[in-house]
Length: 237
Image (cartoon, rainbow, N blue to C red; front, side, top):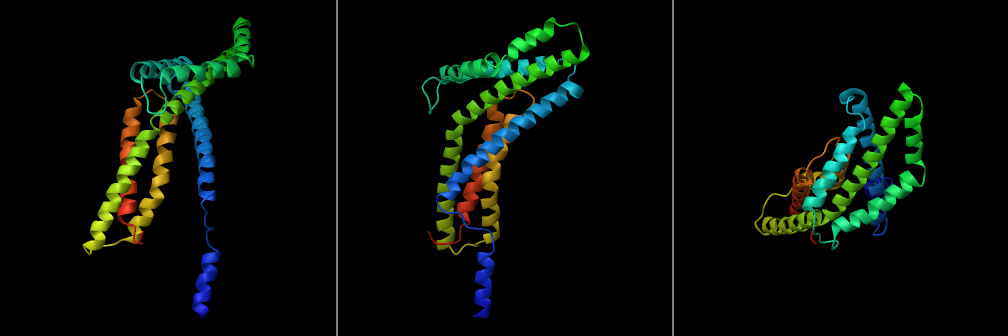
């Protein structure tokens, strides 16, 4: 009896259980944290690149990256499961964002005033880093938009992984196969990190890349983690 009470107290003092409401509500916080962290990291990488890696290009590096990704989006993304005209929706979002962030705030006017001031090294650096910041923010928004459009890919990977895992689990149960709680818990812990790590890597890249190069392998790993998790689940459903 004493040992049973001790185990109960240990469970109560451990990590609090999440309910049906608390778990979904934690996702918006994780997504916002991931987006803010990725934007900050991409800005730091771009600033460091201007200072050490591509000082000759300056803000032109981020400008070319934005134009390259916009060109890729215009040529390749013509349809989507989530919306009728992705390009039109992107323009409807980017133009008001540009108006609000850079025109209404006087940012562009301030940069124009810097250009007309007497030549000064520090003012020139401020202009370069400010322009790079603007281009990186727009590139970041474009990449977030692409991630939203490719979200059905991860949903499909999750459904295929879940179906395959449940089938393999039933075959293992009725075939007296080997069960491993160790594999299940590690696969379960890797599902969310794989999903958010994909976002962080893609949003923070300091160069243009076809999204398929990042998203397709990530969706494969995501589905693999889910199929391993469901395939090694030990309790009865």
